Length: 224
Image 1: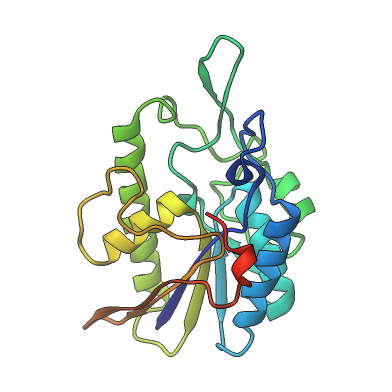
Image 2: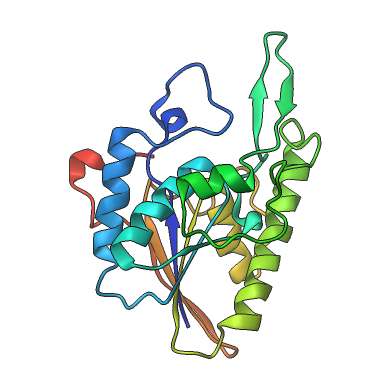
């Protein structure tokens, strides 16, 4: 199989808009970035599309879905480090449950949802927003779980699989593909918004064929 990893389009948090949103949406530029990367995938023969359950990845995946005529399959473990959290007036970081099944259905009517996206949301861990080590380890475990899923369902086929993820968890996923220890601060494999990385994945080999490809973006639309 060939695996295409895509970081979401620019979010309001990426843009630096304040106050910081717990689950930020795409900016207008982020929407355009998602269209550009979707158009760049039209001739790649993508057969399955995955995404994280966060708003910015769902919005990015829905745009790609419309272009490729493929439903987005939500995989919870593709979420960003730290999950869903917001800072309250006293400076404390408070965990939130994330989008519910019905809210995701409103955003992505054709989304394929797993059982761990519930009527109450999907993020029920405590403390990871403040615990960087815990967040890093969870991201690594999630990456291994997603690789196991790909292995069980897609490895050694002619399928071409795309996944929309995040800067941190996407880097953790690339690290896990190649047996590297968890990243320290998302710095090992940096990715621009809608940067695309491609991995050839068989039972015999794993080959990084491109990292953070942004040739689909006009130079003035490259953001991080």
